[in-house]
Image (cartoon, rainbow, N blue to C red; front, side, top):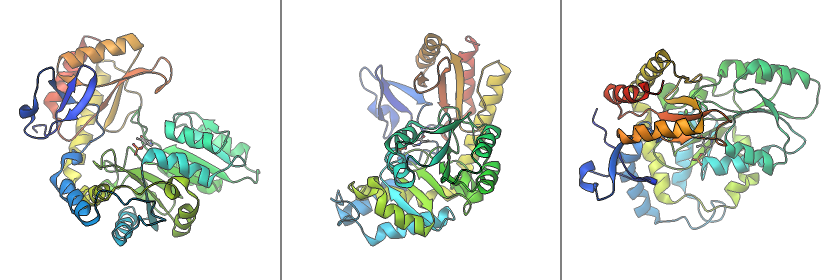
Length: 376
Ligand SMILES: *Cc1c(COP(=O)(O)O)cnc(C)c1O
């Protein structure tokens, strides 16, 4: 598959994605790289339908809704879109929020206070951590994806009457590993806890029709956060929950109440992605099988790919210098992959984080494996 979205980068880093054709925008001081760091797994950000929808909404509503949705920034089309999102996720209701970051930072204080017992995966995203800080929550942290550890913590607080919350990502952004949702849902039920699931990295790529991993347990998870900025090719986020909880959030979630609604174009992009995502099984399968091939070959060469099972494949090299050196070697060979260092990841676990996309092919992977071989 010829890459429709190779990236133009200069030595400082990502600059601008090529429009078309790629070579027409190659200028002095720029080189072309195959991009292995973008979250645009399905290439939707360049899809003409999303662009058409953006223009359509923009022409209808202008460049801005110019206020919070609670003031005058609300239109029937947004409600229709939210109803479609809820149906796609088999949820009672959906509420669009401005970004995943803003959602986590403001949903958590809306739902939890310092009285709550909050059981949280140790590697939860920075935006979740900020949400806990804003709510003055002292987390009860369990080892990453270790549900035995979570169960023992829940057991410890079994007779505590305070409200219990379990907060986790479905697919982890830096490790590409995934939570055992079936067991998590069983635990949530057993201990009568509220389950808050962040699907930023699984929405679009995983689950039936790309609806995310939660789709298999749609009615059993209390709140699912998905984002549009990654595999959905756009921007923004939405929560799925009961209608009652949605009403509550409309009245309490500061990020919803005190922020200007997303621009009309962005709603258009969301609508466009929703039209297309369910029909991208072919691309999803391609991404998954390429990632599987990459992981297996890496393991055979002795690389540490952690417990990745998804399109996100970390190559953990540990040492910061070495990680930078390998990233540099790949760059020289035409591959852009960012080195991820502490504090984004724990000490001694510096890594290259590969994000497999539909435009990649086996040739790209074999090329990377070739370069990496020297560093095994
Ligand atoms: C990317 C990400 C976010 C932030 O979402 P944005 O829409 O980019 O603000 C939140 N949570 C997780 C787990 C993420 O990976």
